[in-house]
Image 1 (cartoon, rainbow, N blue to C red):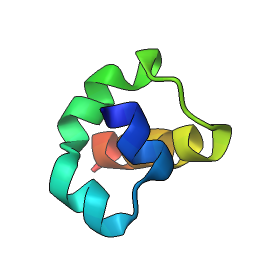
Image 2 (cartoon, one colour):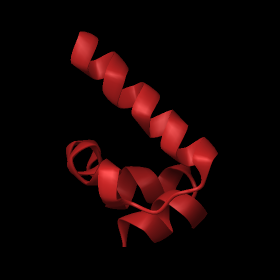
Image 3 (cartoon, rainbow, N blue to C red):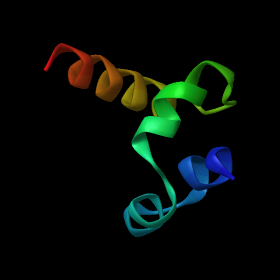
Image 4 (tube, helix red, strand yellow):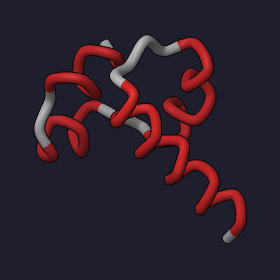
Length: 50
């Protein structure tokens, strides 16, 4: 479900269905387009540094 919502969902879908902490855990195993993966990797790195 996470792959589908992250690939095809809009902002409202992501806010409704996606738990960012779960994405952080699943990110290495998710099959995502490069731009989506980069965006989430950047988010994860910025929240780790904060």
